[in-house]
Image (tube, rainbow, N blue to C red; front, side, top):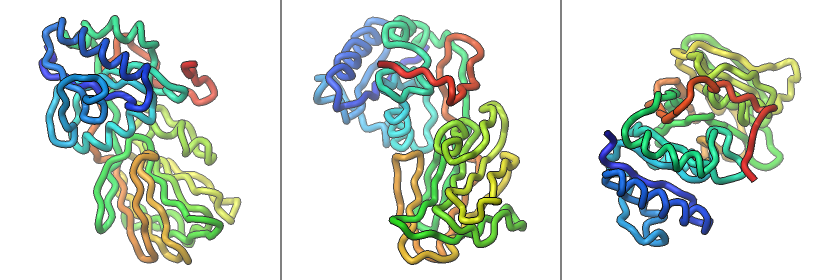
Length: 275
């Protein structure tokens, strides 16, 4: 049985706060020790904890993909089991409506589920280390282009890659920004890293799929302005000429509680979004 559970929800939506209260009451009735994340605790009127520093066994996530990605930035290296309740227009990873997901809270507390697990990218610069579930994007600012070298261990994958930048994605993230930029869809069960150039000047330059144990390095070779590193659309850092970004599929896993088998391949042209 899961004993210590947190609730993470969109703090800016009244419907989200109301759902969080409903979830809290049901989890307490089921015998769990329940807390709200600090971002919603005051609005929900219940006990709060800081998920950056406190450990829990499970987290109920209320929102959409953006809410999930913000939570993962708070969790860092921690990997509690996540129960997802869909509430939003972009909820690609949230398969069920609120009513169904709330009904399954009993199964969540009693651990009557199977775990869908996905590795995250480990991203490192000289001043930052973090993790990405979908992708890390290195992109030029404004109308300027950036020149990059992309190295795979001792081999040069792209040399003087000129354009808007590059996307390094996980298989799960292959259906997100990377796909929009022309990258391939890779089944999320595969151990792989996808590298997709962003609007390269040389139109003959294409994406590459690499083994999951690849050690990848992106070097900012030339730029007139700082370059932005964006992690899952939720974390940003500015980079300058000569900076190096290391990426590998060695980050801690994300663990989703699932109640039916199958359905891991979520195709972008068959997305279902809530109203």
